[in-house]
Image (cartoon, rainbow, N blue to C red; front, side, top):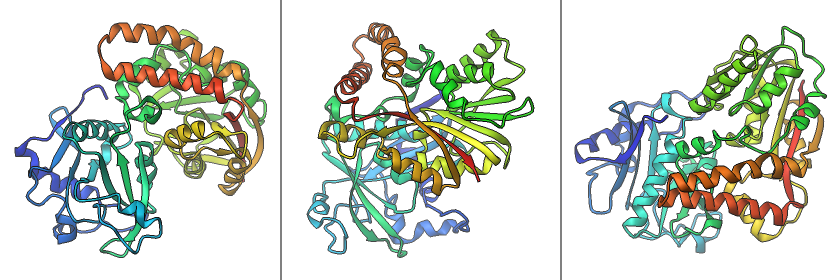
Amino acid sequence: MNNVKIRQIQPQEYPVLEDFLYNAIFLPPGAEPVPREIIFEPEIYIYVKDFGGKDDCGVVAEMDGKIVGAAWTRIIPAYGHAVADTSTTLSNQRSRSMDNQTPELAISVLPEWRGKSIGTQMMNYLFYQLRKYGYKQTSLSVQKNNPAVRFYERLGYEITGEKLDHAGNEDYLMIKNLQNENVEDQTIYEFDMNLICEYYSNVERQGPGSTEVTLKALSFIDNLTEKSRIADIGCGTGGQTMTLAHNAQGHITGLDFFPDFIEIFNQNAQKQNLQNRVKGIVGNMENLPFGDEEFDLIWSEGAIYNIGFERGLNEWRKFLKMGGYIAVSEASWFTEKRPAEIEKFWHNAYPEIDTIPNKVAQMQKAGYVPVATFILPETCWTDNFYVPLIPVQEAFLKKYAGNKAVEDFIALERYEVGLYEKYKAYYGYVFYIGRKV
């Protein structure tokens, strides 16, 4: 994705927003496509009509000269606009925090380019522009059953109300505060994905874990033969994948959406003479390029959060053979109550974090027999993840001296380390192993 350029939209490009407005229309699974003419309904067309006014702000994503995504805001009396709504089922007082100085967001990425962090990069650049122009917050409206709700939450939007749209669909009203720029109010999603990829390419593991933990999880899997098929989803550079390959029979496909990670992954397989059994491919875990019941085992260490634990378990199940296993590590609460500081951090970083019993219940509800759960040791965070990143951080700050985005990113990384040292009794990674039934 290094060839994607995020920039401000140019006046001659305003007409293309009609195409992206149409692509932004949410269709539930199984729904028939709506005619393009629907965008000219006044309640919808207001998002792009006469775009280019003094309160309009837009950015686009360009790939090889083609615009593949757009995100824009304007102040309009539409569904996500700042209007007090007496029908909201949440606090009316919070809904009134939206006003005629709050621009409303619209965003769309062409279907073939989704799941490649383009939306995140556009949003972050748009937030930068809005702050520069003095806006304190931005709003949006999204259908309650749209998976994008979680995407917006990860970027700092909060649900402030509910209402019906012009078609009778139940919508959330959401607001992002643009004034929260302290380290503790940021998340990793607010930084350039290419920057994050470069940073984590310098270490063997892109998350907490260890060889011993991988082998312990593998010990609960009893169905593998030399003909078995294994998928490692969100494999990164393949630290845990190579451990699997050395200790389990079968062929392994590692998948990650960062091409640089996959390049390193395949180099590692070659170095360890595993290239005939282990192959890395670039892909999107939200749209896996696999066949139904193709795999005997699906593995994912510290990566399922990208799609969400519950959604991942449900959507990936069809790729497993009956009786096949899924093994994932996931951030989880150890206690029912936590200090406010760590609660806030994880709410912003990963709203789906939950207690171990609740995660096990989600696994069972998704159609698996829970086989085992265990907590990753503290050394998986400290010795195997945080410590190896210390020299990387120093090198990054030197390489990008004076770059505020890099400085803020490293500050966030160090803040996270401090939080773990302070609150490790309350949370950590947990391995969950289940069998499809």
